[in-house]
Length: 339
Image (cartoon, rainbow, N blue to C red; front, side, top):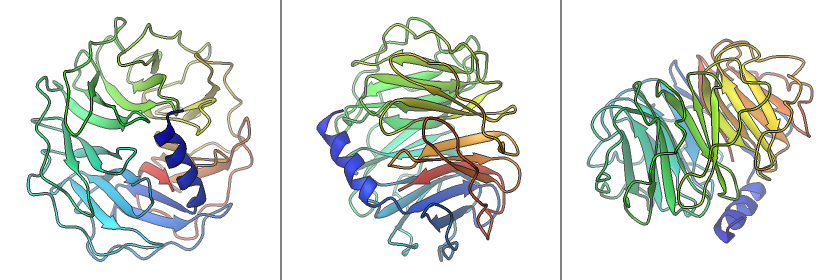
């Protein structure tokens, strides 16, 4: 793992005590202490997001929380210290359309939004607030941005797009601005071009894209560009790959998807191993987002039906589902993030 990834992972492990869920009904974001289970929900921010929370991310230090929202201003950020601080001023140039995904770079010096309309990906410098928007890439994505991810070294940024459109993944070099778009993968992600999620593995040697058509998950080696597509898993996810995440060691890949069992997990070692058994208590509806905690000992799935968030111990497989939070998120769990 690159040194920045090691430092960030170690720092996050020390701070691993919160879980956030972006959801479809006011207040659109719910946050909780985490200590082998949910603590009492934190108070809502004084200034709420304006509509459905589609994505959520903490900065690497755990001092900022950002939400990608359905309505203007599209991206909302707050100081975070065991609760919400006063909302940061909106960026001077807002993203366009709906905000679907958000990510900080590993240094915490840039914030990226996957958005609909015009640019489809929007990135700002971050320094206790939004800086002046970076210029759009010379080659824009040609469909709605769904999710966005930086590689662990912070030298590349990728956005999954849905239109449908070919390609359904766009990737660029990143160094305080977009470089020339990387060539499309030789084997397309999906025939119809709906990409819904993206994640790099912790070593930065693989990239995974969740998408709308069978096999619902596509993975490639990554080394300053896409390598030859890995074989699909022997047992496929059963529906659209809405969320994807690697565990911190890079030995497991998880896909949140649209059809029961709503979550599929596999060993990962330069390819898929045999699918892990489903959890004994399944999520109750469409899996929209998935995240491992920084220690890799818990997996959380945001989903469409109450209780909207399901969490499980993880140790080479699912443990017994944790109790639901006393105060549930109020609508579809879409994005989920630990810090």
